[in-house]
Amino acid sequence: MKKIKLLALFGESSSGKDSIKHWLEYKLDNVHGITMCTTRPKRNYETNGSEYHFISKEEFLTLQKKHKILECTCFNNWFYGTPLYEI
Image 1: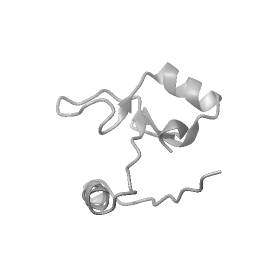
Image 2: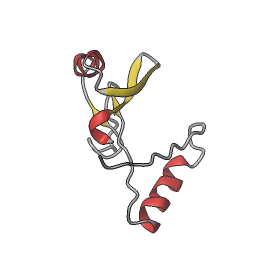
Image 3: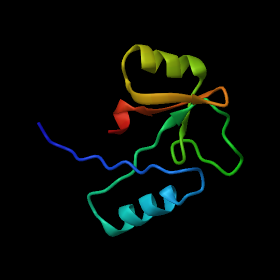
Image 4: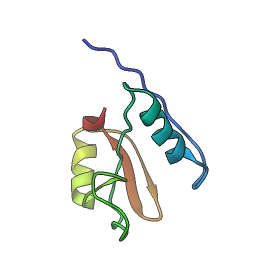
């Protein structure tokens, strides 16, 4: 079984997490970011699969019920989570 290492970046909104993630991906060949999923609507400047995987509430709850979400939270009545297929 192949072992992987996870690095989690935590911080407040607009604290620079994405900038650090992009820098690590650019500098290190074996580093890639994980795209989370959300039930919130996509903003005009966002691309599905880039910033987030934008899915319906039903899809999110199905993933959660099947234990296919590593972690999740609810913020402003929208669900956010890390799908296992991204790891």
